[in-house]
Amino acid sequence: MTSVLNLDNEPEFQLGGPAYRLMQRLGLIRPGTPSILRRFVAFLLLTWVPLLILALIEGSALGPTPQESLLLDFATYARFFLAIPLLFLSEVTVGPRLRMAGRQFLDGHFIREDDLPAFAAAVARIRQRREALLPEVVMVGLAFLGAWFLAIESWTATGPALTWRSGGPESLLGLSLAGLWYYLIAVPLLQFFVSRWLWRLIIWSLFLFELSRLDLRLIPTHPDRAAGLGFLGGAHLSLGIFPFAFSCVLSANLAFQIYFGGAPIESFKLLFLVYLVVMVLLILGPLLIFTPKLARARRQGMREYSLLANDYNRAFHQKWVVGPPPDDEPLLGSGDIQSLADLGNSFGFIRDMKIFPFSQQQILQIAIVASLPGLPLIFLVMPVMELLNLLAGALL
Image (tube, rainbow, N blue to C red; front, side, top):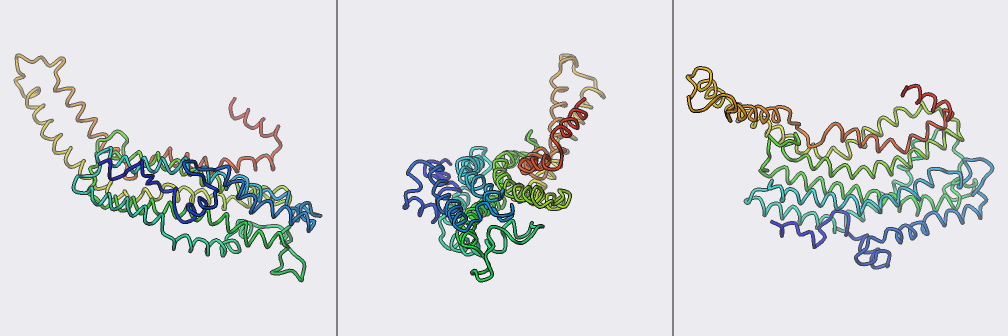
């Protein structure tokens, strides 16, 4: 079994791919190390540093208004100094967790012997999809288009249109040189790395879909209340680093509009609610692939253990109630009573079994992680002492 998913040969979801190999050739990734700091510095040299130099030349580093000042743009800091490092860091946190989750299908004996070739083929397709050139070429094209149409500031702006990216009437596309670099280089690079991770999530979801079509050896009485698949919910908690990174950018953009633009925080309630729902679905939604199989396992377990309970309870009733009870076996301390209780507990596990391999607590954890970067927004609309008094009143 261990040769099907060989961990020594790095069958992970985040490592590899055309862009990864390109960064290796350029020396940005050294053999045997993730080279997170090296890649982060190189990314800043391609994005933030040119933006700052061009803004200094054009006089928009600190412009006449906050909206026209690059150095006061909170979202730009969050985008290039927080989001990208978190995406690079995720390669050493998320990837191994997903790899271990994939391996647990083998170690937990969920895969039947007859399905081992199908499992091996599913693992091989992970590598094929990860190494494919076409998806990353498409990502590059989408990143260039997304820089113009999918940037956060294009669908959250409530203030004036004039920004540090704006150019004069005779400028190309109405953008400054810093604005051109922003939309042609900086944001496309960022969105490429984001879309690259979305593709990794799709690869993982396709892998789970293929496993859900196998005749898995599920355990309806498993104490995780998910027939033994509860480890998937724990593995997907590591994906919370992505909504956290995205929330840093979104919250920074909203903070700028609230602090400098005077936008009311209440106007972003719907946006924030939609964001939380989308993030929870994005992180835990792929696990719903197993819902039909878990529902079927629950129905089958209920039927089988119900029949078993019928037989056992009738035998117990006949032996100890209808009687006469055996003379050589006292009722007090009889193993029959403990077995009856154990059978009831097993039936209770099946009755309480979930049809999705994650818990309500894990849903809440993802929502909390996605909300954390937005908490400082409260300090923009409520004085610190007033907030502390409010918290003290709630605790006392």
